[in-house]
Image 1 (cartoon, rainbow, N blue to C red):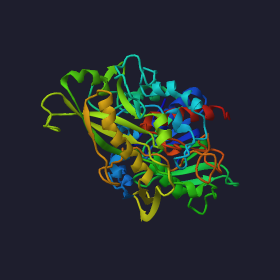
Image 2: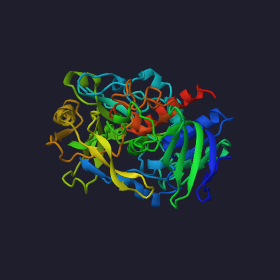
Image 3: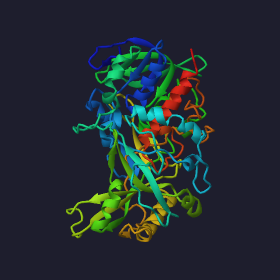
Image 4: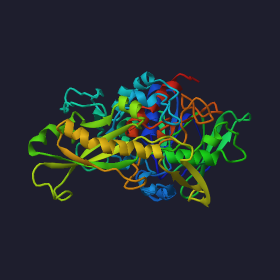
Length: 482
């Protein structure tokens, strides 16, 4: 039986398993559950730094942002069973095929895996995310899309809201650990330990394999976990911080990818690019751009920048969300409806966006960190380009009338609380930390998982895609045997 242990008194215990997953958020839990179900004869453990609910361990998430300082990092990185799904909104969309390709206008673009390989794991990931509709086509048969006359710059796309949302609403399932609690508890070879923060790694004599990890509890008890395979899934920023700390020690191997650890951090810059005003008669035709429930998920039509426009105008990937405004938010509208047009933009992966360790230590004795995050001129140019084009698109396609907002760099641009990069996937340790199987360069049995392995970010919310890549990793681990 899977036991979620919070108030146990493990001290100097040595626990052995076949697979050890570090991190009890949606990525770590979904990997552990699937692997344990596929391999009932193999013991699996999950180590979560926090407790059943967010609590005192949250102090270790406190950090500063240098550059685009747009939000409190402690509020957007939840250290608890279920991870940052405690504050997740459920937004889900697949990567586009272009996202995986090398683009000559975007630095460090291109993935080391094929898009069709990624697609193989969409359906199992949807099931894990409680999304019961597996049709992700941009023209879903049950959504009422506006027919676009001019679609050179923008086209329709398809979002779903997973019901794995923590709320009091009866249609929401709670985070992954809550929605799959029964399955977790029935899986006899899976054990989840809470209040276990990894502070040290021990390696084989040749230092090609990770053998044992040492953990510390909030009240300073130490424990040891030995495994054949290890997966680190603590969130993109924390993955970068921990890897820099663990492999900066004299006892750690000299990884060929060490200089890439913590680098290439990406966000999804969010910004209002304009306002759209519709007549009363046009409101009904835009209903599904606000959302409609189909099965377990809420489905939404949105607009995205076409592949052709990205190539022709050398743009980042971008998605536009129409946010319906209330009379209080926009009192000028007497009849009809006002919508704020908000862009979710891809960001170039550059080495200068990185996690840096500080001298000051956190409550577990691990160095605190600061996040260096800035947008490039190319990032700003891409957003301003579609801000200029959006009013023309609205007028030509009879969506209403609109005004666009072009802004100077840095003004009114927020992050999306989407953390990606820091242990990115690539073909070479010169600009990546893991290979196409998410295995750390230089080690035989250590893997990274979650948004930290994204080579590029696309203009899609990361959570579902983290689970998809996690299921691909499970398939790889299944094939290792022994």
